[in-house]
Length: 199
Image (cartoon, rainbow, N blue to C red; front, side):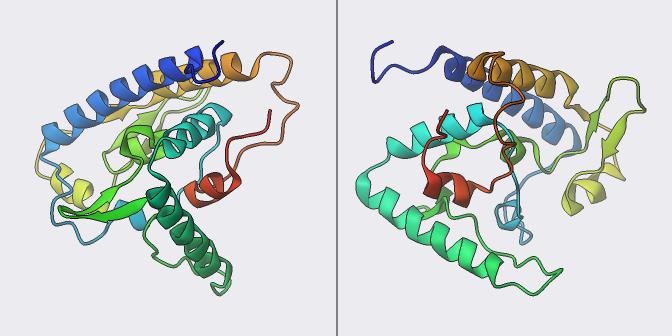
């Protein structure tokens, strides 16, 4: 594969991301959910991410940014980790994701096209069907829960999306590495500062 060529599994990941965005949009539209003017920003929630393929895709998207933008986000990532590291036990500070950058149109996600699954699906009511177990339902953000009381439920089924992500992770790592690498459990700030995963 050429040095600058996109890994074929990462191409498939972006196709999956498009399906995630469509599923999110359908669920949000069904209940009238919009993030506009929401004071409880999801981008201040402490999310942790768990796949090497998403980490690699994030790193690739970040590397494509202008150097000045990368430097700005790295500084914000260091601040993000410092604030969380200094928090009192049991406390979770509300700190904006370091990928947020100020533009003439306001604060936007600097890695929006490359943001991981958790960022894409958070907020709308959703359900996960675990093998051999009862479905696990998640009510969504506070605004979504309020809207869901006044309209029919529109649960996003995460099951096929997560199943496909698991297949992509296996294909990206190869069966020989599955289970032998440390489990990914990182924030976006940590992934950006660490650079691409070393495989």
